[in-house]
Image 1 (cartoon, rainbow, N blue to C red):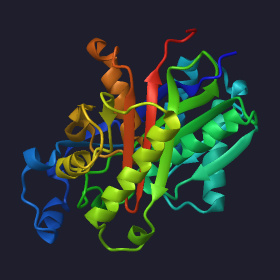
Image 2 (image 1 turned 30 degrees about the horizontal axis):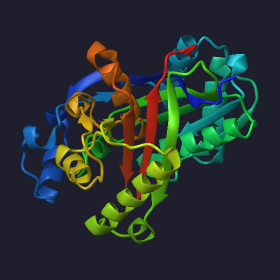
Image 3 (image 1 turned 90 degrees about the vertical axis):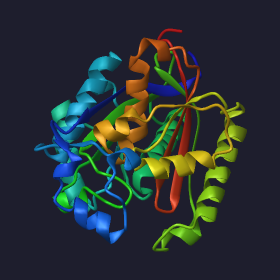
Amino acid sequence: MSEHVGMLAPAYVLGEEELSVDSLANRQFVLRQYNMPDDSGLWGWGYYRKTRSSRAQLACASMSKTISQSGLSATDIDALIVCCGDGLNYYGQNLFISEVAGALGVRSGFLTWIGGAGCASLFSAVQVARSLVCSGSCTNVLVIAVDKIEEEADRFQRFGVFSDGACSFIVRKDAEIDYEILGVEVSFSLASLTAAGQDLGQKCQLIYDVLDRLTARAAVLLDGSAFFSSNVFLPIQELEFSVMPVKGLITDRTNTARYGHCAGADPLINLIDFHLAAEHRAVSRALLTSTAHGHFGAILLEPRSRNA
């Protein structure tokens, strides 16, 4: 058996309603509050996606696509990791899991809920899933990230326009994978966790530290990879991109205006859409990053042909 650990059948779903950012009632208030010019071209906003479905229904829709595309069945899944930024208590999490697992036919297995790193939590889930597989504890770990805005006044914020959505994939050790996980790192800056704003110097150092560890442990260069980040406002993306100690990255920010910020799911959604285009399928590696207040995560993937 191949010793490569990777992702199988990544998939996503978005809120079924596509709406203009201009229609958000609190947009002008936030613009005035932070002295932001009303310029969609500058910030990159265009549309956002809203759902009438529950978080569990969003999760089920994405995970059903993943299981269908994987060629596996629900009985093959022996672990489930959920990433969700909402502060559901223990009972709320149990109800969510019971609905999702019941709908998919997953009856038992390892289960955990991850949310402590904000939008970078999905990469924390990948670390956990990879460890479970490498240790031999689990064979097929189903990972899901789901977020839904309950209060419309929370959609437009200083750094991005939030959309409802979910993404999912299976982490396993086998030749049957779509992307090999060459490395994954997530870290936090202690000085930034409780600060009202994040110091640029601290954020730069956090980015350097994470990418240095990723490069060292993956034992490969990041240069020339396709690059996918969070769909926050374009000036923030540009600022973080400008300080990355990596050369020749291939960028595609189409989804910032098209989908808005789908929280932790952004980098994976952008990866999937990028490789749908035939001209991009030959790109050898993908560097995904995710930023959150006080946190930064990165993952390096390499596309694989199934049965390779």
